[in-house]
Image (cartoon, rainbow, N blue to C red; front, top):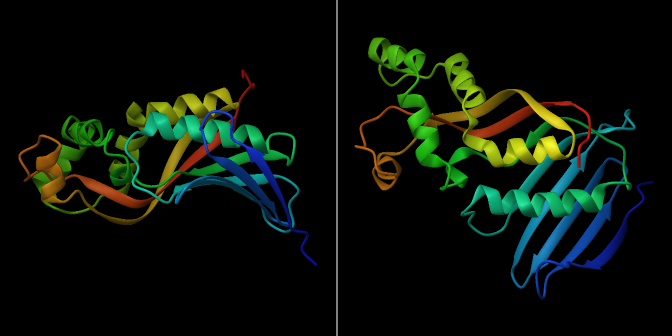
Length: 200
């Protein structure tokens, strides 16, 4: 039988916001609610394991800024500390198109990649997962996430992706590009992480 309990706390940094914590055998979910908006940070594990290896972040309203979201993640993560044994291997905070502030740098990273541009010149609008993963991993587009993970004792060791496409023409133009660039984008992006010394 699964044990479920709820804890309600006042969220100190946001007026009229509250945090609720739901715990089951294999998941700890921390939800920050304010009016009709909410942010959720979940930690999951397998039924055979005592350590929580997977972290996922989601939000009910449109995201505008990665740095602001990482600040919320930090607060919610702090609520989880001490309640469960965390040993992350995978982090999921959504996909690049959900974070408009990082998209110009994301697009530019592929334009600046000799490997990707050579691939495009030879193959046109065709996906190459190996090159895509390399460009995402080697460019510090998600620097706010990198900083957050390091503060909690982790570094990014790689990425994996699912459900791929290309940045739409309208988005390319919106972010200041011509609109004919072939820029791959995953719609599921997982960050592989490993433990380092906790510095926070």
